[in-house]
Every structure is written in C-alpha cells, then in structure tokens.
Length: 240
Image (cartoon, rainbow, N blue to C red):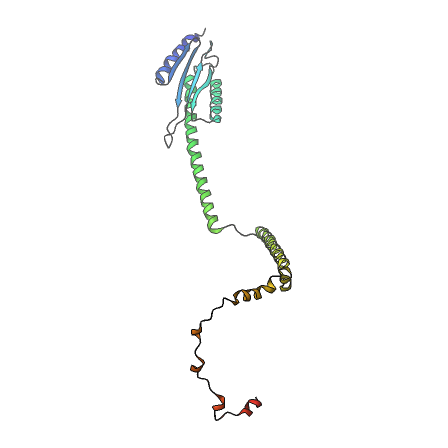
C-alpha cells in the first residue's frame, strides 16, 4: 500500500531545499504551498515572474495536484493561459510520480521563452518604426508617384474647383454691372450734382483772394508792337 503522506512529506523537504527563498507553506491540512518562479533577465534586465500555488490531494502523486497562478508580474493574459495549459500537460504526463519540481522547471523554461519573445517583439517594433520613418521621409522628398488613376482624379477635382471660381467671378461681375449707374442715372438719382459746381462758385465768390505780387506792372512788360515793326504787313494777316 502506497504511503502518500510520506511521499508528500519527502517532496516538501526536497522542494524547500531547492527553492529556499521562494518556497512558502500555506497550510498543512490539506498541504498547500507556493513557489515563486522568475525568468532570467532579458536584454534590458526585464523579467517576468509568477507564483504558483499547489495543493496536494489525499492520493497525490497518483492524482494530480491542484494548481493555480497565485500572482504574476509582467505577464500578458495569453501568457497566463499558456502556463496553465503547460501545467495541465505536464501533470498528466507525470501522473503517478512526484512532479512539483518537473512542473516548476517547465514553467521556468516557459518564462524564459516569454522574455525572449518580448525581446524579439521589441526588435520587430523598432524595425517597423524605423521602416515607417524612412517611408515617411521618402514621401516627403519624392511625393506620391503619379499614375493615370490619381492624375485623372486630381484633374477632375482641379477642373471642378476652377469652374466654381469662374462662376463666382462671373456672378460678382454681373452683380457689379447691375449696381453701377450711368452719368444720367447719377443725375437723376442725385439732383445736387447739377447745382454743386455753381453753389461752390457762389460760396467761394466773396472769399477769393488774389496775390497781386504775382503780376507785374503792365508798363514793365516788354511787349512787341507789331505796328512798330518795319517788316509788318497787314496784308499778310489777311492772307492768313
């Protein structure tokens, strides 16, 4: 008859010596404990971590232990799901043998894989960003390649905008022509225009000042007397 209690006790002692800093007993009846598993450090010293909780059944190891993710750090939901599936697979394969060390070791390898995946994902994201930056820079210098399709699309839009501008201009010119009055219409609409000049002269008549210094005495002016000219011939004037 298998002594399950002794097998469980021996395994607990072994686990405590293997994981002295991460092994914690939660209860003795039923036997329940946790083991914290941490991945190796990644490129930027990042790590992922999970604390596994195990509980022995009465007939362990002939029956699978109960297990769960007690806590975790830096793991995505899909990572947690993958770890639980891994534990189930390993437990089924090792049924009938003490298996906690095997389960923890499998999770340890999985966490290391996750760190490598994080590194790979970051490198891919970096390359993608660099590629997008290069493409954006190339577009700035070279623009969009001209094809028949995008040229016809641009031309149709350009022609439509040009036609709209012409329509607006014609409408504005037409409206301006309607609002512009002829000289006759201006006089007919404003009767002050025909008297404004006369009124200005009348108002300024008594206030016009003449600067006499601008004129010389008539006697000082040297005027040629045509009659005193010996060559003067009145007939020539008549002939003109």
